[in-house]
Length: 246
Image 1: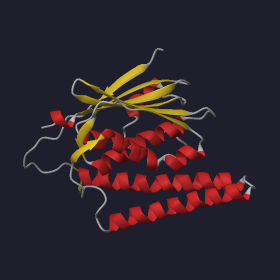
Image 2 (image 1 turned 120 degrees about the vertical axis):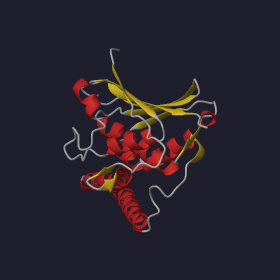
Image 3 (image 1 turned 90 degrees about the horizontal axis):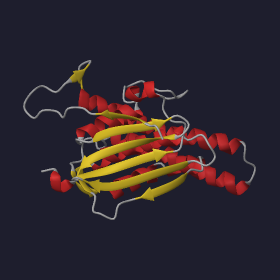
Image 4 (image 1 turned 90 degrees about the vertical axis):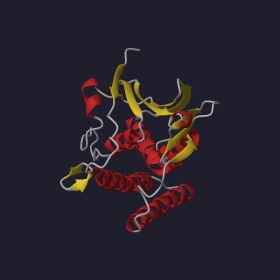
């Protein structure tokens, strides 16, 4: 398969006492938190809309009750997100620590389970048996991986959709591959994916992947994209193993 590969890296921030970079007077980190939170609010809303669309075409009572449960659950997610925002306990309050990447990925998949169920997508998890512990902020990294997973889900248009998640240990790195068999990405759009506001979706806001990129680069991760139209896309994320972080 002739794939297009692009490596997207950013230089890590320098330590010191320099004034934090800002955008329109708002510190970049604060802006990232706001954009990420806003995107997280939109994800449950999208699930609600998908559930309602299906509900309108259903007549079986059992199925209606199941979809109603999805609506209630996602409404509660919105309430929790807003509550956390008001108490300033959501993004940035958590310190980094050593954690298994499997736990982070499973947490992200749990958050995406309604979207996966509604689109009837098959999940394949091929996790390494090697210890793949990384030194990261759990909450923000989970959100970053969730946004990439949701992007993969949205790219799957066929009835036999498969989302494959692979982890490997190689050369002191934990390698995560998030792979879909969706519509693929045109070559000219790959470098635009992490640009805020860019989207090829009809109702997309174009903030999910930029937020994911900023979060992962803040954890010193590298992201590589391989894609072929009508075949699918791979997001390949490389993180230092915890033993090599210090």
